[in-house]
Length: 636
Picture (cartoon, rainbow, N blue to C red):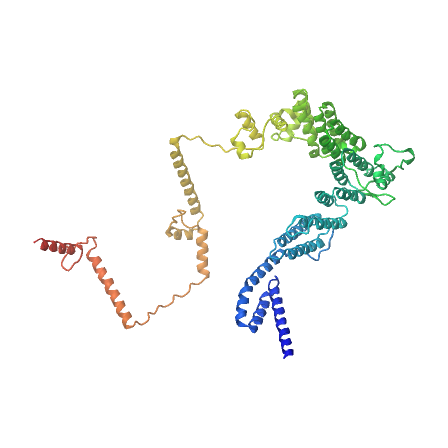
């Protein structure tokens, strides 16, 4: 008996365990759920019919939900290329679509479609991001999305988990400055400012670049102050090499010394070098990155380093003169910055704030000349010309001297290759240039250039759309000014006829008459194009009530060809079934009623309901006489 009880207990435990496995498996979205459900039903029914009905009714919604989640997840898992190697980005359309599909897949899992617990959802989302980075390891947006979910997403692992993700991303992409910047911001938001600075320090040591030093300088300025930020700028100048198009003097040993010395060399004044430590100067072509004899990588200096430090001195520190000297230092140390329009524009705006008009004009003139020497594209030169024209028209002390502006417009037009007029042919323009000289380009279309100059300096025009521009005077002048502005920008307005009140009906009638005339011409043209053998058939066809015309000839020919090629089906013979006694009597009664009604209609075809037509006729007249007799009898 004891053994039987033990066997029954083990059997009961096995049944409960198997039921739990079935119930858990039903809630997992996967294939062949219907087969698993049938097995579960058979299992429950074999145990107890009454309990089986209750359990099946309880777990049937879970089955339906699992099937729905499986179909949705299958839709988001199409063409994810899970066997793809983690190659560097190629920036193709196919790769872009692959990234979008993986982002949708991760976003779907974050919605918790399976209604998992917090720990289960965390494991699920983390696993899908691991699968994603296995395919897109060299794409920083995936790593950043994963770390952002860990830091602030639902059921994420928190800040430490996000830092672990960023650290892993930096290991796989050691030269990605954006990931390092995001990691430093995460550390700084946690209050770990020293770790944030160290994150940037490690980055500029393993992969020095302009963006890395700029970001390091900004965080150091925010945390440690002005002097520490200036030392970072000095380090960047010593560690980064100057870019040149062809050949330049490369200071290899100085870069290696700066890399190894690190912060030890920050105390030295900028530009001072001991005589015994002067490096060997050689001529070499400069690739994107170099490696010194000590094995340290050497980055390339870009204009962003000087521009960022100058803006820091101007905006954060409030030293305008220092900012101008930083810009000028960049031009003196790196000749390639002179034909860089963004750098020149930033420097010129600083000079405008300091009120140095002479240096502003001289700077733009030198930059334009340098751009022409290196054959820079006209599209890149145009911001410099526009800035100089805006300065002479709106900022200079002369306040828009016409003689200066005319000369500047002529130079700008020749430099940018702007056509003097889009109306005149090229041959005529060449002849005018020989006859009128330098003023040929200022005569044709000169008012348009005047309007364009006023729009450039901001005294005319705004961002009104084309429709609103047609209704509003955006020039601030009279109606001729607004009309010319619309023509200059290629806008046209459909004329609206000013029709008096009494002329509307007459115009409508005239329009209808023209339409009828046009329709008659169209019908006449169709009749002329109809073949001779088809005209008799078209004449007998009815006219359509919608189009007020007969069918077109080509449709009639298609219908006739269809009738000719496809024989008509035979008409089935209708045989009336024999009628039973009741049906026969009913049919005879219907025929009698029809004959009676026919006779009645024949007797009263004039529509009169009276019975004056003769004896035996019925109608309202006999009823009227009967009522009259009844009233008379009652009255007597």
